[in-house]
Length: 370
Image 1 (cartoon, rainbow, N blue to C red):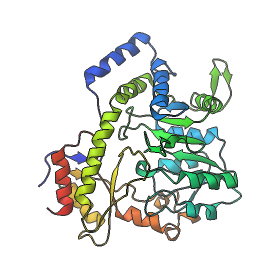
Image 2: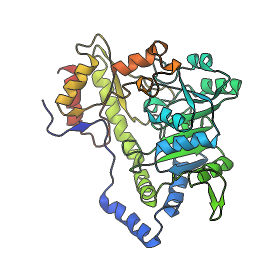
Image 3: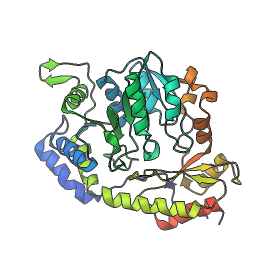
Image 4: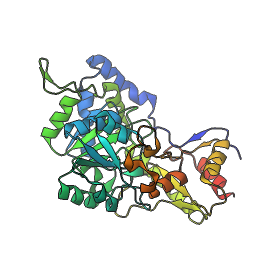
């Protein structure tokens, strides 16, 4: 049955417009629109409290936050990273004049495979940039052990990992820095936005300087900074979003559970496993379409599209397949078999708090043929 209303992979959880008006009125009365105003400061503290982190610096988007995180740690040379991510991960390296070195992913988690990291380390390697793919934590302990052995920094692209906990603590506390995205498609959003989570006040101060042109005061500039500050309107929207985040996560969990139960016995459809001791955020629902399913991945993708279900092959193609990367030795497909396989099998199904039960049933029926 063809849907009369398009269903997308994700839709932003929007509060009632009437609830946002008082924030806008306060911004209007304050006459402060940006430059780390009161809502900006309130959201930083509120996020620290909610996420269980010590320091957080807000940004206008997650990509600029990645760029500045590398600047803040003075990363140069080569950085080991994953080919299975959104392009902002490796683009942030190129913007800093850093050479990405791609390492394959683990086929069960689709995260950077710790077993492959050491072989990619050279004298020019200065850091590792893993991604908590779909919000599932990387093997943070093993990655940190490797980093410590070789004196490398670790910057996590945690764009998908808002609210995720590992062993009863925020996964954002691992590594030297973690970078969040608050894009409209994320579990928690500020329309556009991002943040860097850092462990100490000195690092946060450097990051705050870098995101504001390097200014310390009106007449003192200490670094070649950029304009990465989040506006007051975005910060106010974040404060409002934070009020409903727990309820929205519960709705996502219910949708996730129903998908898993309905697709558990469908031959050729593989759902990524639960993350053990992790408290998840149910940011995405990827399935892998294997060879024993009656349709190819792309055929199922088109079938869903033809019926108004705008699922996404996320991530496809691999970052390493794009023109600015594919000439790198580490980008050779032969070096990345697990990533290539996942990119050719993955479809992310719609999951968001306002996804109706009947809509989810129609998606499942298209996959199961029932």
